[in-house]
Length: 281
DNA sequence: ACCATTTGACCGTC
DNA sequence: GACGGTCAAATGGT
Image 1 (cartoon, rainbow, N blue to C red):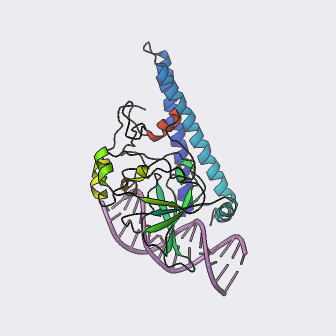
Image 2 (image 1 turned 90 degrees about the vertical axis):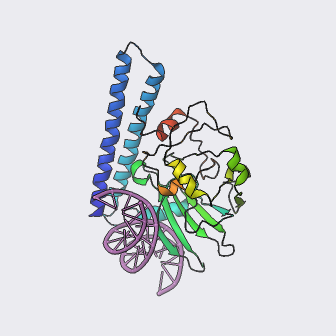
Image 3 (image 1 turned 180 degrees about the vertical axis):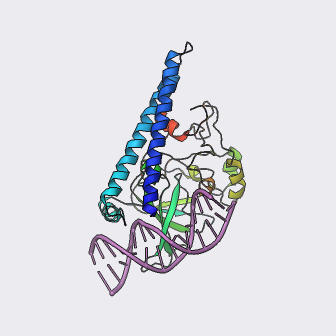
């Protein structure tokens, strides 16, 4: 019953994606006809159209995969095999101030789907998957478990990398950088955070409530404005479906603590992805 | 009403 | 059968 609803949801999303592509194509057509013809706009619209098609294809493939399996337990076997086959990365993050029970923000939007006490561990393991799993077919999964030895440490295991490419970035002012305590990050295995700079991990957990208010009013900055790290100061809008309260809880996220080495802003496509709901699009 | 989280049940693997 | 991973109904927050 629920599965059926999910299928309909998938179909709606595919249709919606295709309609967006169609709308962009119409705009492209109008732009081509227009006397004040803009080449930049053409490029943007073409990217947008390609994106819509890509997303629709991803969604259809995901839908097809789920149909192949039994109505119940749709991808159980698939997931099991995935975890065995894929190299898993493990990160140990020591947080100066406790952030009990959270998924520890890493810039992606996660949704908790389970929790389990693991044999031999005092603390439960939380299971998170990417919130874009059904909308963009992103299969990224992570497991977060509080360390038994050190209550301030969380072990994070990433399984599968993100296909959604929707990481959010928020900058911090120079003053805040001076004020806030540093996150202590240690590498347990793998090389995910090898190149992590300590100053990129500054985070005031005490001050999160204040920051939430600030980021309820996300807006796009002028393209030329750059933050202290030299990144383009791009922030998602509140209308972005990926923005959750959990997401808002972090006000600075570096681009480094990720199992996949994706720089979201290296291409126009990524920028378009983040600005999905922009009114001008 | 909608959405995210919680939690017991279920399933596959060993 | 034990264990780990996931599902999905129930629950709670907004």
